[in-house]
Image (tube, rainbow, N blue to C red):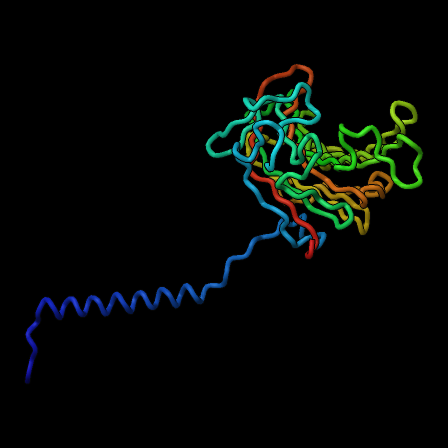
Length: 290
């Protein structure tokens, strides 16, 4: 029987052949894996809002240093005096708002849009804030909320067709506010009239998302809210669980004609105790074709 001598060259050729086969097998396995898809939050899916409008992890670089320019966030609109940039920092890669700070997604002078889009009341939307705080003191008032660009501090009125001069009408949507109870608090405000006379606010109070259970705010939570103009319905979600729903008369028809921007405020109650509010992510969805 003829045999071939075992050489180093033959060993290397054999090892190379095995490596090539292993590489081919790995590539075939990768091609066979289905592509990973983004998981739509239940609060968005429930309304058929399957189009992701944005999903951002805010950073310090996203904040305008002078409240101007093309940025995602701007310091202050309703806080006075305007919070300085020292109110904002990064903690282990997470955007941090010191108590007294406030970020808004639309330039305070309303001269042009920011980088983040507004949310259409005509088409409907789902918005979700992923936040936590440095501790659970009840004096803290972390707030994430929405206002329409049709109503801002630069306007003396927001008159619509058929309304009298200086008449104002808008919907404020409070996704989450802390410090009002052991659980969460969310509200929709239907506001109209001529300031200061004949000015009315109809509060669609949503209680504590239907629960009095204490919420550990030092842990990251997802606070979500959907507005569906087809049914004039607002739903609040906590950590992907539906908490409470409200509709007319608390949800006004005027909301369908407005466009909403975001606010994130590290407010305080009576004792003004300092704390930190951490913004882990902000995401929004709308109907396909938005």
